[in-house]
Amino acid sequence: MTSVYTTEATSNRLLGMMKPTRSLGHDAAGNTTADSGYGLGSYSATYGLDNRMAALSKAGVTTTYALDGMGRRVRKHDGTGPASFTGLRSSAPLA
Image (cartoon, one colour):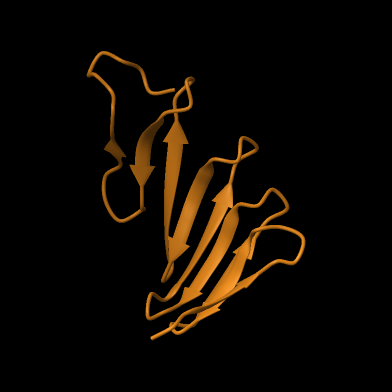
């Protein structure tokens, strides 16, 4: 099977592909904001002013992310259970 890719004429942004069919959306900064097709369902993402992913949504579930003062991802929460914390020592405050 040979895949066919579609790119934006003025940049190298991937807009979509066929075999398998998939569509991508981007914001003005070039961040991928939508991804659909290939049996994956549909994803949408939002980004903060720093162009880091702030939230990812799929099938009505939105997962949010928090960063510490050094830009490290320290919290992930999908609204279905307790938030998970990564990269933190127990004495370190959550930024």
